[in-house]
Length: 137
Length: 137
Length: 137
Image (cartoon, rainbow over all chains, first blue to last red; front, side, top):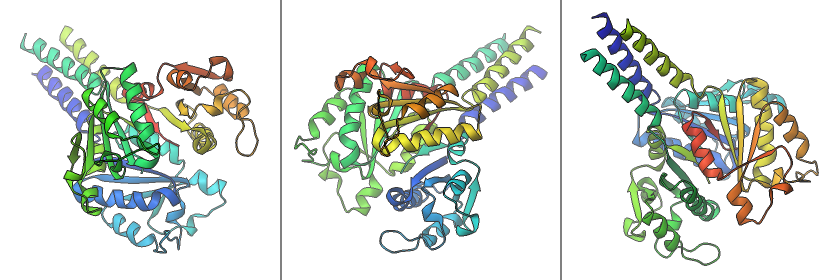
């Protein structure tokens, strides 16, 4: 019976492995000008159709700009509104700390919805290895 | 012997899990102007070198345009020809229904080779969770 | 006891399957002008934060240009230096052979750091099926 229990555990682990990343998605934004507006719209539509999706938006390089205090899109609308609304629906927004260093930016220049990660690209790889799907808007 | 059979099933499932997505690929097109020509060429080359590849092209936003009736590339060649040829080789082309709604388009404005999916981005995530590789042309 | 050993093997295979792609990443470059500089910087930062990462850069289309002899970035700096430095840290750079044929290029026009692969897109899919994460700079 011990063996049967071991079998059950193995099968459960296997099933878990397959189900694992279900509904997890990482969005990659490295250029706010060309990607932020579309990306935020994509994420909103994503949640509208799949409300259980766990979405992380990883930003680096010029992609971090839309998460800075006072940032506005090309129509002059502040990004903070839609970002805050998505944060309220469980989306996390992460800013690359190497970018901060390279571009001489400080964490307090970003809106409070922003989280930070040591390296955007390492984070993108790690999340995929944890079963996240990857979408580049 | 029952246990041995269970083992065999477990191993088969495991092997199946690993082999699972083999040769499955999703191409992501969200801007026809910059991606459609290259994307169609990529897909053709893909099949030439890996004829067993199961390829799905997911389009949304401005990416759906090359699948509309009468759409032409920048050289004035209709997209319908290459799309139809790839469809004949097993490639599926999917159009995001949220895009239809947002851009006020109707299904009958698209060529008959086009299929439809409730949400392009949700579909991109789901296919990856089913083992599809992701390529953004 | 035979059965127990079988169980152990199954579990080891399973764990191996999950750990499998750990730290493996493929970078996709299809346009050198817009991606090469950022991509090389991304890869360097990636290795700085995750030195054990196994990184492959797959190039095709106009993405192969930065690996050609004498290629320079928009600031006039040769690409060969940073490419060679990253190669020294274990990064591999692969050029699509279909692109060579299509663009009438020869292997000896490329720097010695470049490797070749029959098809860039097939390679991108295969590496992901082997557990590589995908990043498009």
